[in-house]
Image (cartoon, rainbow, N blue to C red; front, side):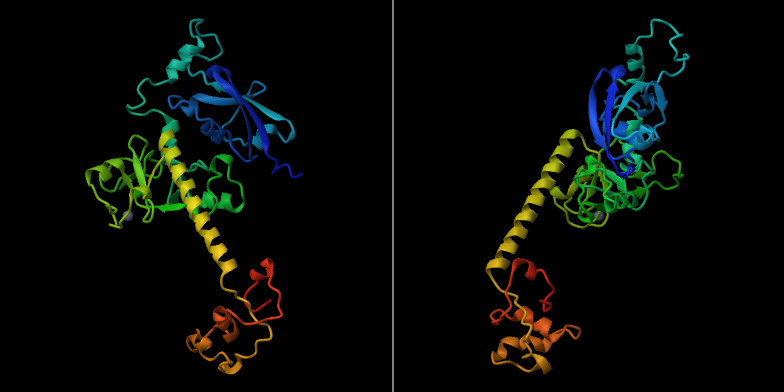
Length: 347
Ligand SMILES: [Zn+2]
C-alpha cells in the first residue's frame, strides 16, 4: 500500500493540560499545527505555547503526521501535547515553586473578551482553515462559517484530501465565494488585512461577522444590526436571515448552521426523489432507433405532434429534438433503468 495515502492513527496525550487523551485517525499530510487547531483547545491557550513531542523529542508544528511517524506505518503515533516553558530555562532549574498551574495561569487569559493576545482566535480569522496560509483573495466560506483560500480548498476537494472535520463540504456548491474588504494600506504582513466595509471594524475575531450567501459580501454584525435592512449593505441584493452565515461562530452557532445545512440537503434530496419518481411513472423518453419518420422534417402520421420541430435549435438533430416530445411511440427497444441514462437516441 502506498504509505503516503494511509491514514495515520494518532493518540494525543496532554498531561500538562489535564485533558483526556484523544484517539484520532487522520490524513497523513495533516500538519501538527492543524492537529492543534482541531483539538479544540480552550480558547485561552495560545497555540504557540504548545508543542507536540514524540518519545520526548519535540516536533515542529510544520511537520506532517506522515513525517512525524517517520514512515513507521501501521502503528499508532503516540504524541504528547506539551506546554512550552518560556523564559526561565525551562529545565526545572528555575524555582521549585513553579508548578504546572503556574504555567497554565501564565498562558491563560482571564478575560477572553478583552484585547486578544490569543493566536488561536486570530489565526482562524487571518488564515485558511485548511492550509494555514494567510487568507487572501479569492476566499470562500463553507456552510458552517469556516474561512478558506479557495484554491487550497478546491485542491483538497479534487484530490479527496479533505480532513474529517471538513467532510461536510461535498462539492463546489458548498463553497460560498466571499468578498473581503481590504483595509486600505494594510501591508501584506499585517496581522489583520480585512474589515467591515460599512463600519470599518477589523476582521480579527474580536467582532462578529456574517457572510451573505448569494452575494458573498462580508459584513460585521454591528452593521447589519444598526442598519436594519433585508438587502446587502454593499450591493443591495435582497437576502433572508437564513442567508446569513456567521463566520467562525460559537459552537452553538455552528450547530445551528449545520442543522440548517442538513435541513436544506434533506429538502433538495426530497425534491430530487420526487422528480425521479415522476419521471419513472410518467412520460417515456423512448428514442426509436428505427424512427426515420422524421427525416427531412416531414411530419409523420401523428401530424401536429411534431410541430415543435419547426423551432428546433439549428444545432439539435431533428431526431434528438423530436424524441423529447415523443411520448407514445412504439418501439421494440426494451427500456431498462440503466438504458434511460444513455444519451437520447443512442440506445
Ligand atoms: Zn452584497
